[in-house]
Image 1: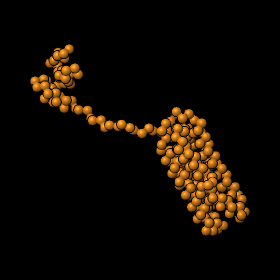
Image 2: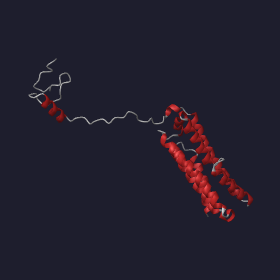
Image 3: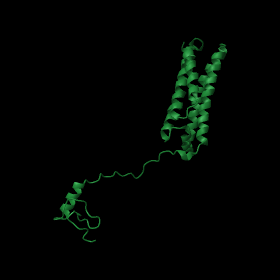
Image 4: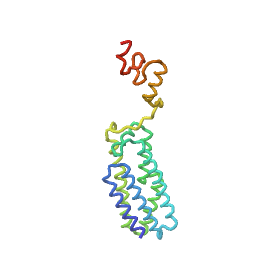
Length: 218
């Protein structure tokens, strides 16, 4: 039962991730697919024995680290479309992190996911469960395809479309504007005898009331 639900989830989620152009939707479908693969492992305990803990743990560990890293990088990107990730090209360290997380998520060596999947393939092939093995390999191929296709889209896109947010420097809090009544009171106290019913003159700082004809210096 767990094997059937897991393999259907694994394949369906990876197929639904193929046409996605939104980065977080694609990462979300990838997480659903990995959950399905872990269900397959749990359903094969009869042949995996105690090794199912190593396989499931390796898959979960690699997936959690890689997905956390990719979501962190996603938070640095202003847009949500895959071409917007071209903004990372100006940061070599972020590019290295991006490639590392994609390789870890795809199950490439030397990351834990590779050894977990290799052990799963070895047990399934040894027990003659070729159909299940073929479906798992097909899902893994689809997953690697859209992950690396998204990487290629990001690298070929115009990096000017999206930029990493620049850190705020020399920020100073701005004081709220003084209300009109406060300004009138201040200028009324500074220049006794002047009306306090309007804004001060920019030239002489005297009040320009309706009873004034204009600036004394004008």
